[in-house]
Structures are given as structure tokens and as C-alpha cells.
Figure 1 (tube, rainbow, N blue to C red):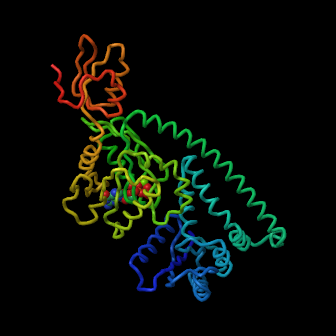
Figure 2 (cartoon, rainbow, N blue to C red; figure 1 turned 90 degrees about the horizontal axis):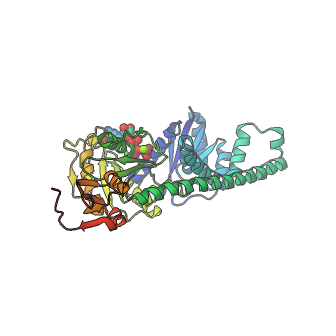
Figure 3 (spheres, protein in one colour; figure 1 turned 180 degrees about the vertical axis):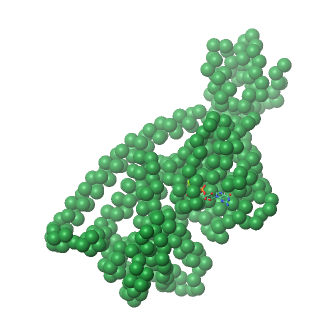
Amino acid sequence: MDKVLIVGVNFTTEHKSQHFDLAMEEMASLVKACDMEPVGRIEQNMESANTATYIGAGKVQEVREMVRALEADLVVFDNGLSPIQLRNLSRDLDCPVMDRTTLILEIFSARAKTREAKLQVEVARLQYMLPRLVGLHDALSRQGGASGAMSNKGAGEKKLELDRRRLEQRLTTMRRELEKISGERETQRKKRAASGIPRVALVGYTNAGKSTVMNAMLSAYDGEGEKMVYEEDMLFATLDTTVRRITPPDQNDFLLSDTVGFISNLPHNLVKAFRSTLEEVREADLLIQVIDYSDENYTEHIRVTEETLKDLGAERIPMIYAYNKADLCGMGAFATIQGDDRLYLSAKSQSGIDALMTLISGKLSKRYQDCAFIIPYQRGDVVSYLNDNAVIHCTEYREDGVYMETNVSRIDAARYEQFLVNCYERLPGCE
Ligand SMILES: Nc1nc2c(ncn2[C@@H]2O[C@H](COP(=O)(O)OP(=O)(O)OP(=O)(O)O)[C@@H](O)[C@H]2O)c(=O)[nH]1
Ligand SMILES: [Mg+2]
């Protein structure tokens, strides 16, 4: 396993902030998530970054010595490095260098499973790598022992130019394929939107427990034997969006989606690349923000989540705050609800899932209304649609058609307006 030395810069003139320590711990988690071993960390306090080496010449020397002492295979910086800084650092440290963004991109690239996720990550990676090719090229040629041709500067530059062109071509091809896939996804999404079934999306910081909440909901309210999703104690376990239909008893069905987690300073290219996957979030009727309440940095996580949602244009969607992992916080009576949008739960032990459902149906009920229809016998399709998509209070077979008292979405009520006999008012009830 590769050994990694982490370098962090604290940009304050005052005392070291607590936030900085937590950020360094997060860096160690990222390194582990990338299947590498953090063996040491080194910190630098400064007011502004050095343009040539980010940390300044004196500190570079110190890092170089530490690399030797710890026999580190890689140095990771807690921030984005410019192409020049990257090149200078890998040369001066005589060791491969990565920045936080590249590390996150590496994790995403190792985890991506579907064709779409793979393409999205690859596009983001290439976009980030292209301007940094020079530094990378230097580092690689030294690492692998430069071959005769590559140690010749002219040939090296030519190769670099070729590499760059080849990567640009690959980018174009991948972008085209992505557009095609996004188009198909769009068609599916339109279908779902037209069905009028409300959509609820799980959002939140990575590792908060979104997938665990999804699975707990599925095992409690799964009407159709839907498949579970992957949950794991590591950053970015989920990269692909999964949509599942939840079928609670005596309530309207809704679609629940589980999606990629957020992290502070999520590379901008990555957010952009994942836009189409995150469309599920943008178009949701309700968001459930899952928060790891046992993490001492949880308020910062909420801030980052809300900032990312704003970036995505999803800040106005109603939200439920689900403070998860309450079992780790010594809270005896978790599963408590506060107001109509906040609860403490433990998804892992399935405790509080019914309370979460109460909040969800409370929020979604505003989109529904009680309506009575009389549907002509030749429109069996409408009867079966309502049976599948509405809560049916009662059904009667009358002379002029099937009389149904229902609780339906406003979209469906409008769609079958011609069969409506009573809406908003008190319904008479069947015989
Ligand atoms: N103790 C405890 N652990 C939990 C709880 N909910 C989830 N976990 C654990 O937290 C870890 C992360 O859970 P996931 O559901 O994969 O988290 P996620 O938000 O989907 O994470 P990413 O997909 O990586 O962004 C797993 O090891 C879960 O078992 C809980 O209520 N209590
Ligand atoms: Mg997940």
C-alpha cells in the first residue's frame, strides 16, 4: 500500500483554527478512501500561498526530509495546486505530488460503476489534468526512469503535444457520448415527472448515511421487492443515482433517490460533470438532508451541503433535516421529531424510519387532494391508473361508470378533470 505524507496549509495569521484540524483529518480519510496509507502530516501557517511552490522554499526542504524519513511514496496537498506549483513541487521533492482535487478525482474514478458515472469522472479528470500535463509528464518520466527518447528534450515536448492533442480528442468523444446518455436519462425523467408521482431525494455530506436511510426505507416500505443500494463506511461509496419506488401503506407512493455525497471544496469540474446525475436532486419535490450527527463537524457539513445545493439551483426545494447516527451520540430516546422538518434517527438500527415517513407524508400531502371521479366503463385504463397511483378511499360500480373517491396528486386531478365530480369539498363516501 502506498505511503502518503499529507501537507496542509493554514491560511490564518491567528491561532490555528479547529476547522483546519478537522480538514486535515478529512484529508486522511480521503487518502484511505483512495486505498493508501497516511503515514504523516506536516503543517504550515502562512498568510498567502507562494506562487512557485505553494508552501515556500524553506518548507519544501522540510517536506523533502520528511518524505525520506517516512519513506513516503506520495505527497498530497490539502488544496488545489496550480500547474506550476505542481511541477515545481514534484521536482523539488523528488516524489510524485497530488493535490486534494486530484485525490478526490482518483477516488471517484476508482468507484465509478455505470458507464455514465465513469464518463463523467473521466471528463472531469481530463479537464483538470490537461493544463497540468507538463508537471505530470516531468514527474512520470523521472519516476519511471526516462527512456532514451524521452530524456531528449525536443522529443519530450513533441510527445507532450501529441499527448495533449490525443487527450483533447478523447474529451470530445466522451462529451458526445455523455450527451447521448444524458438525453436518455432526460427521457426517463420526463416520464417520471409526467406520472405525477412525487420525487424525494436524499442529499448530504459524504458518509452521512444516505444509502443506509434508503435501505431502511426500502425494508420498511418496499412494496415491489426493490433492490437495496450499497452502503459502506467510506467516503464516496455512492456515485450513481438510484431511484426506487416507496410504497407506504395507506399513503401515496413516491420515488426516493439516493445520490452522490458532497464534500467541502468539491472540485467544480466534478459538480459540473455530475450535473445530469444530480438533476434528480434539482427536480425533486422534497429533499431529505441526512446529517451525521455524531460527527463533530456536522454544522460545517450542513453549510457545505446547502452551498452545493445552491450551486445546483436546488436551494428552494422544501427540506427535512434528518440527524442520523443518533445511537452514537448517547441519545436515549432518538427518533424524536422536532417541528415538521427535523428529526433524530438511527438508520442503521432502523429506528426513526416511521417518524421520517410521517414527516415526508406531511410535506407531500400538500401536493394531494381528495377527489371523487366517475369514470366511464370504457376507460378501464384510467381506473387502473388511479388504482396504481392514488389512495382509493372507496369504489362503486354505478350505472354511469365507476365511482371512485381518491386522494390524488394535483397533477392527476387536473389530468382527469373531465371525470371529476367532486373536489376540495367533503366527499359523501360510498354506500
Ligand atoms: N452507528 C451508526 N452508523 C450508521 C448509521 N447510519 C449509517 N451508518 C454507517 O455510516 C456509514 C456510511 O453510511 P452510508 O449509508 O454508506 O453513507 P452515505 O451517506 O450513503 O455515504 P456516501 O455514499 O459515501 O456519500 C456506514 O458504515 C453505515 O453503516 C446510524 O444510524 N448509526
Ligand atoms: Mg451512499
